[in-house]
Amino acid sequence: MPPPATTSPNDRRMRGFERTSGLVQARIRQAGEGRGFAVTRLLTHWAEIAGADIAAATRPVNISYGRGGLGATLTLLTTGAQAPMIEMASESLKERVNACYGYAAISRIRVTQTAPQGFADGKVSFDHAPAKATAPTPDPKLQAKAHEVAKGVSDDTLRAALEALGTNVLTKSNR
Image (tube, rainbow, N blue to C red; front, side, top):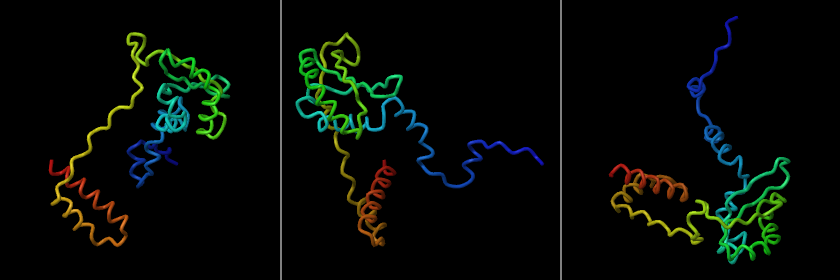
């Protein structure tokens, strides 16, 4: 009997279609390993989770896990004047963050008064970045062409999605 052939990544792709989740799974796992599953929600919805007053004075910086794996430490960045107030509100904040996770993931909140860049800059801005300029409106001729291509689709949602895709493709190819 001949020895089994080794499969290379190129051979694996020759079997047919693969799920996209399988292709990016390693990168997603690597990016989220040290931060936990719900941390992206914690970052993107910080004002809703912490409350407007605390969110205006703090930013979540890091979530670190101990050796035992039981309970994590949430590190918050704040200015020196706000640190005592944040420390006093840390128990209620911990409950709100754990409600975001759905279980008691955070056991401790650590408040730091340094900027993420280090000690060189004493000014920490907690304002959100200004919104980026919106994309320019596409050419009406291109929109009409995309509408013409997608007009045979009976499902309204699918037709609208196809029109948007067609407009994007036509706009990019005209550049």
